[in-house]
Amino acid sequence: MAVKIRLARGGAKKRPHYAIVVSDSRMPRDGRFLEKIGTYNPLLAKDSEDRVKMDMERVQHWLDLGAQPTDRVARFLEAAGARPRATRANLKKAEPGKKAKERAAEKAAKSEAAE
Image 1 (cartoon, rainbow, N blue to C red):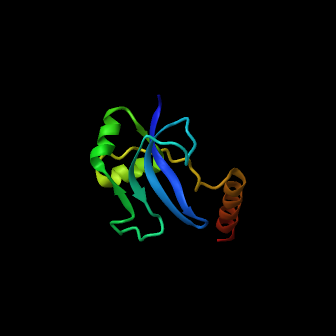
Image 2 (image 1 turned 135 degrees about the vertical axis):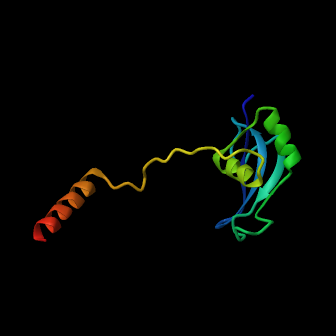
Image 3 (image 1 turned 60 degrees about the vertical axis):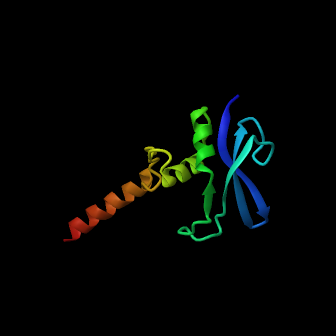
C-alpha cells in the first residue's frame, strides 16, 4: 500500500483549513485516511505558531514506515527540522521566451548603434 502524508481540505468556501493526514494514495483528497497527525491554517500569519501544528512523534513514525510526504507537507517538515532540505528543480519560469530575448538583443544593438 502506497502511503502518503498529505493535506485534506476542510472549511467553507474561500476559508480553507487543512488537516495533515496519513492516507493511502489511492483514496480521494478529502476521503478516508489512516490517521490525522496535524492541522494547517493558511489564513493565519506566517509567523504564527498555530499556522502549522503537527504531532512530530507520529510524523516520524509514519516516515520510518515509508510514508512519502507531498511537496507542501515536505516543506512543513523541513521548516520543523524533521527532514533535511531537499533540492528543488528550478524550471526556469522566470526566464523570458525566445522572441522576448530576440527583442531585447535588437533593442540592445540599437542603443549601442545610437551611442
